[in-house]
Image 1 (tube, rainbow, N blue to C red):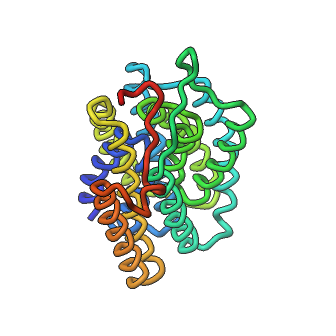
Image 2: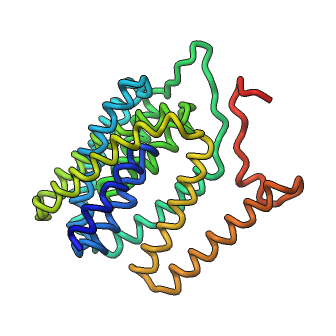
Image 3: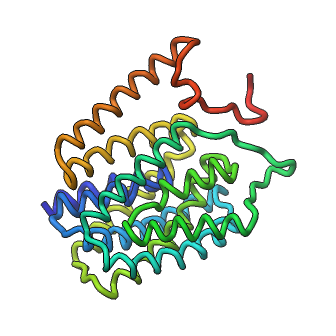
Length: 291
């Protein structure tokens, strides 16, 4: 099972490099349900894997000009404070509760990604959030990251792309800087109360790094809008797996069924002019896009 976990870690890296997120979404279930770690050990280990993988993946994005350093460093600095606090606070919360909270955050963010938001271009093409807003969002996202070992890319990418107005490829690259900073801070908080298996952690990390480098190269070849929507549906599907494991099989099956129904209705809406879900799933056309 450890060998399988290491092999699957390559796909964790691909998701992280390609999407700017998904690393923790995959790593926590992978370590908990495949490698057999308890919840808190899996979360702590995932913070190491995602932190290292994000840092290395960010190098490829930076070389391609897909990182906005000012926003990333300010957001990441605030996130580190929140993540460290979350890692310390996690010792007082049962592992099952943390994983259920993890699933709830996945669902909320997936809906945000599927709805989308209009991208706004500034006159000089620079995208910047006001510093107070960056700090506030960074603290909140960092706290979630530290608590449940997640909330990295699948919260940072929407914050940068939907609220900050960054193009999806730039949001992905910038998010990797933020994720790395927050993950290491959260790990620091966890190590005060949780012991991790360093041999397994380093092996999984190495495999994930290989995938991250591959994923970063694929980013420029994928349509940003399709990437965002695929990410949203993937997150919803993964949340149903965790709900099935941590609450009850019927809850996971119900969540999976609702996701499938929503996906089918979304496809149907794409073919008909009148559709009640159009307001929830539409993506505004970015300014300057061809009609």
